[in-house]
Image (cartoon, rainbow, N blue to C red; front, side):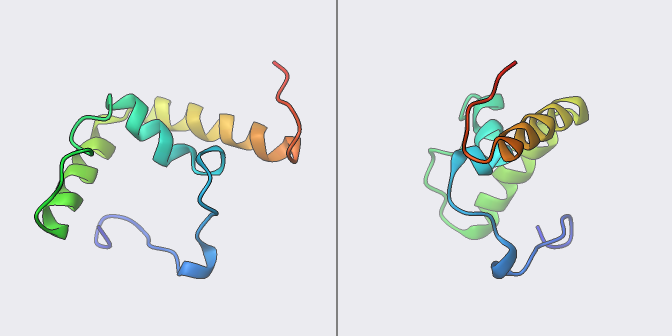
Length: 82
């Protein structure tokens, strides 16, 4: 994965919140949670599944998820009004 994506140091990782990790959560939803409930025998297999899920998401979908993420950040814990 590190060859394909920039990996941030742990100090920059977001909190463990589905609201603040939209790509983690939306990736599961977009894929229908296919492949991820499976126990992988090794890290290589897990990475292959994650890469496949990531590649299946369109750029438009990822852009929409990121836009929705910023709406959450701007509310500072409040409600999102559409």
